[in-house]
Amino acid sequence: MDDPLAGVLALTGVGAAAAHSRSSIDALLRHPAMRRDAARVAAQAAIQGARASAALAAGEPDAVADSGPAAGEGDADAVADDPVLQGALRVAAEVPALADVWRRSPRQALARLHVLAARDLVADDDALGRPRPEADAARLDQLLRVSTATTAPGVVVAAIVHGELLALGTFGSADDVVARAAERVVLVARGVDTKAVSVPEAGHLALARAYLPLAAAFATGRPDGVAAWIRHCADAYARGAEAGLTIAEYMRTAPRVR
Image (tube, rainbow, N blue to C red; front, top):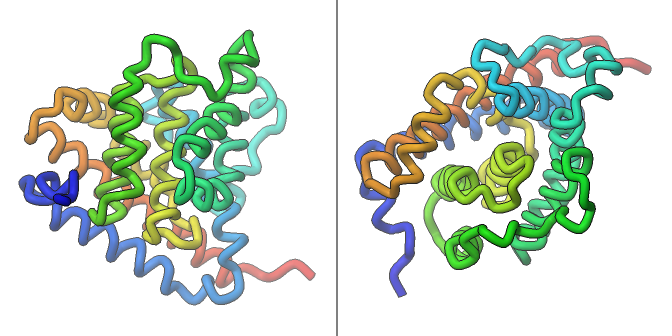
C-alpha cells in the first residue's frame, strides 16, 4: 500500500527543509548538556514553549520568547490571570508522557491535550476532550491514522498534524494551543526530538507574521500552500533547536545548585 504522504515529500523544497530542521535538532541532542542536564533543559524548553504558544494565541507577533537563564520564571500573578498560558503550561508538562500515548492511540492523546489546554476556557466540562459536533470527523480520523501509519520524516508529519488541526478547529476552544502541542508531541513520538529539548513554539513565534497566512494556505490543500507551510514549520523547528541550544549552553556552564 502506498504511503499517504509520499506525494508531500515530492513538493518543492519539502525534503531539503525537513533534512535541515532534523540536522538542527540532532545537533541540539548532541550538546554536552544532554549527558547530565537533559531533564533540566527539557523543563525549561517546556516553559518557554508554553509562553510562546500563549503569545501566539493572544496574537502578539512582536512578542519574544525569552531564552535567558531566568526565562519562564515570570510573575506568578500574570500566569494565574492568563487561562491560555495556564493551559499551555499544563500541556507542555505532559508532552513526554503523551508522546507514548500518541504512538498507541493518537485520538486519546489529542483528547487529553484539549482537556489540559481548555480546562479554564470552557463552561461545560463535558465539552473537554470531545470534538465539536460540526467538526469534520472523517478528516480527523484520516489525520490520526496517517500520523502513525506513514513512514514520512517526523518533521513532515508534525507539520501536517499542526496544520490540519488548525484547519479543522476540532474542539472549538484552545484549538491553536492544542495544534502546537500536538506538533511537539509528534516530534517526540516520531523520534525527532527524543528528549523534548527543542522549542518549536518559539520558532513559530519568531516567524509569527507568516504563521496564520501560511496556515490558511495549507488549509486550501493546494500543493504550493502545503509545501509553503511545511517549509515554514521546518524553519520554526530549526529556530526552536537554536532556542534549545541556548538553554543547553546555559545549563552546561551555570553553577549547579547543591
